[in-house]
Length: 483
Image (cartoon, rainbow, N blue to C red; front, side, top):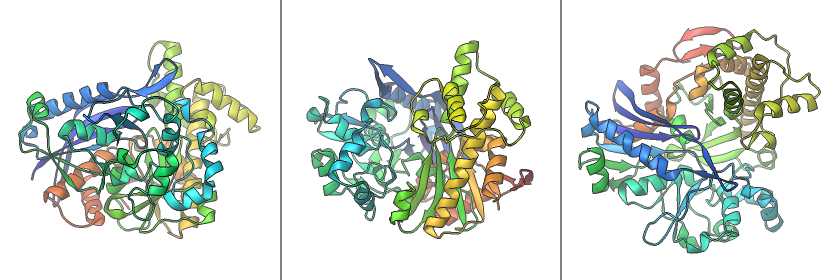
């Protein structure tokens, strides 16, 4: 059984994991964890790409010093979607990648829709309207100076992969989130590239998850202590694509909530749904591993709660006790205020508690006053949004579900799981928390030959090796194990 390394970067934290998989066995060990987030520079919001690279190298070094890690056979990288770095012809990074929450895309989509109606665009790329999608970022980028100097565009996981191995490419699951790919083929669409106003040569060839991309650079091996035999493997480089691989479902009748900074809520399909009703409901069709379609809606996720906690931490000079806050929120009587967590006001960083209270008041509710009430309002609002997205996914796709699998960091939040089960009227199976890293490792292991079979076989392995907790619709836990 070989060892594999998962580099898993989320919008608020990153981790490097050692994993191994074989029939009947699936193990994961965290070797390095670090913070992540936007950096404000002169009124613009960026990602600290060089800092992330430093942490990735540190994590690979720790992996090499962990028993069994130095002999790892493969590495896979997954991150969030849509953001990118620009390279010169020689491969130098032009500036630091911009953050999708940066304000530069305000109003850009509306300008694009004057040229191509929004529904026609949806029929080509299958994506819900999100103001920060890559195609809109590039339209905004054209108004700045860097784009004209660029020879190549690499999405964030592909940029890190290039720094690791020298390979320049675009992995299909993340490429599908850009708005530049044909929803039916998963490859770049010339008309969409033209719409963005960019040179087609900027975009590298698209490859599928499971592709072995090559060995690591000699300087990476020297700095980290990994052996020369380790290879970079394309995984589902959009973190949600990797997370959905590790949903421990027994059959296809499931919905999923990949819950972290964002909540990605939907079902897995064989073909995209491009109807007028789907467009009106703002549902997206993104590529999954093995050519599946992740039919989902982006919900604001735990970002709102994270920003409230950051606000209180700044006021108190120390981090709030989240378990205590959640316990107090669970004791708040039901029937309190709820808000639409997907309102644009909740997207940027800022005074989130004030925004939650204002949104509640504008909706005709008494605004939450105490911290426990604010937390209850946010968590219940998220649960309602998750339930609405599940119901819409079923209605629009005709794909019936018997259970909702909630994976990612949100699986630790018992109140969120309980309220989601109540709101959905379906059992919620919580876990695994590290679904993204597990999915990353599973695709590597299959590419290396340690595993075989379709996604259903990979999910059976997760189900047989990782505990979950099931929450009944009435809001009570019904024990461990998966449905």
